[in-house]
Image 1 (cartoon, rainbow, N blue to C red):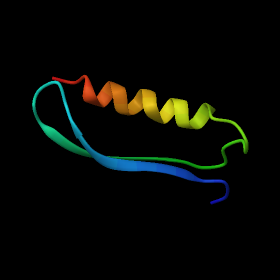
Image 2: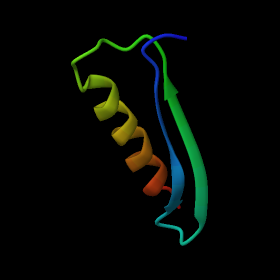
Image 3: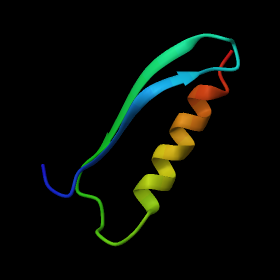
Image 4: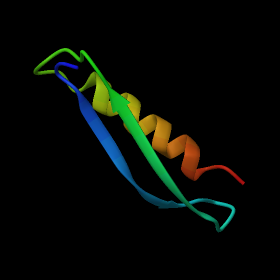
Length: 50
């Protein structure tokens, strides 16, 4: 793995359930935030689940 980023944690969903999540990105482009924005969108989609 090179230039990897990860985001993990607990999230309270719209359904009231608490979920554990982990998202990892490999080979991201340094000095950009595109991968972080994508991870945020993924986590937002998880949080919106019922």
